[in-house]
Image (cartoon, rainbow, N blue to C red; front, side, top):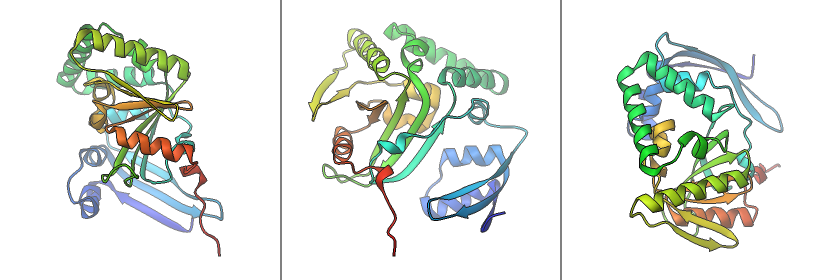
Length: 265
């Protein structure tokens, strides 16, 4: 099938991508160690390009990968709010975040008892320290779509901008629970929680150390002390306030990923 066929030997993937990345990447290594071989085909027409095919996994798979494979999928919609400056867009989707965490716990308990015990200890510590339920107050409002992007610098900075957009089932419910978490953190730690307004968007800051990493791994490390705001059905996080302000500017000006059109001759 297809105009072009692509075959991937995952054992060689880290070495190949190091040419472009310049350094090792633990997530590429994780997929390399979990996957065996992929056969894909490439098609294109005047509206879109697509790559489809199959990947064979190894008998021993990383618990995080196993949890993703067993957690369904979610419609990708974040491109409707993301900036047109987006250079790299990683979409992670599953049918239900609570079920994903249960699958992760099950995979850890079976394949890595030491990591499972560490996970349980960290979760109890966070919930006990702040007096919250990570399932009820943090996971319950999430629909299952996570978009992680890196954009070229906007008008307010010189460094690449990182964005994490999490789609909510109800933005009202998301706001209610985020405010509850803020209140609990403020009460039990000396961390200062800041709020400011920019063009009718509420920009918040709160230290959420351990929350994201506990459930979603090191990929979310950059968002442990995030600034965040609410855009449509999404809670949008970034590690810098300037990145959120640039994001809001693009959203207001309709400079969005969904509006990009290729030039025609």
